[in-house]
Image 1: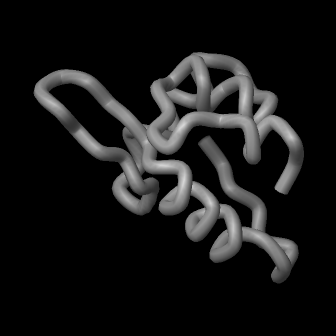
Image 2: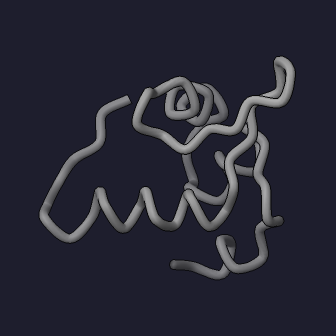
Length: 69
């Protein structure tokens, strides 16, 4: 991945996810609401474990697969 990913905390909130993936915060929330995205719910808080994000990215890259949000 990139340097932003390596510097990211172990668990990312929507703002950190947006910065890491270089997408808008609204798009980050859309991703976090997808059934196939590794979102961890703690109460109403939505978080993404960095290692699970890396696995998800690996599964959705390499085959020219496009992810729509």
